[in-house]
Image 1 (cartoon, one colour):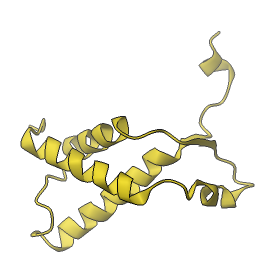
Image 2 (cartoon, rainbow, N blue to C red):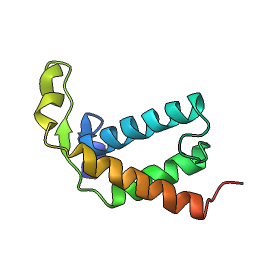
Image 3 (tube, rainbow, N blue to C red):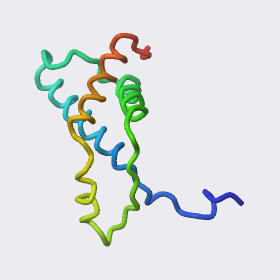
Image 4 (tube, rainbow, N blue to C red):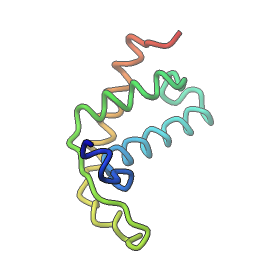
Amino acid sequence: MGILEEYDTSRLCNETEAAVFRILYSYVEKRKGDPAFLQFCICQTCIMDIAAIALNHLPPHYRMYSADTPHALKQFHYLDSDLLADEVMKAIKIVMSSPHHY
């Protein structure tokens, strides 16, 4: 039996990943409301490609999620929102220059 089978890893959370998806979601919502805002594809493939590229250029910040500690998110205030947004924008440009969707 391996460690992943022996231990429950479902409560492990990468805060960088969550932050990237929050930023990306806000861009998608703005794009839906204003088609002139950031011309980029919002299909499943492109969104996942954008997230993957951004996350590969950012350091992970893991924590263990617990329903008993809802304040846990506050301890990750050190994630640089400007850096995160910059990496998402770079990833959008990369994916839009060569999309993989069908």
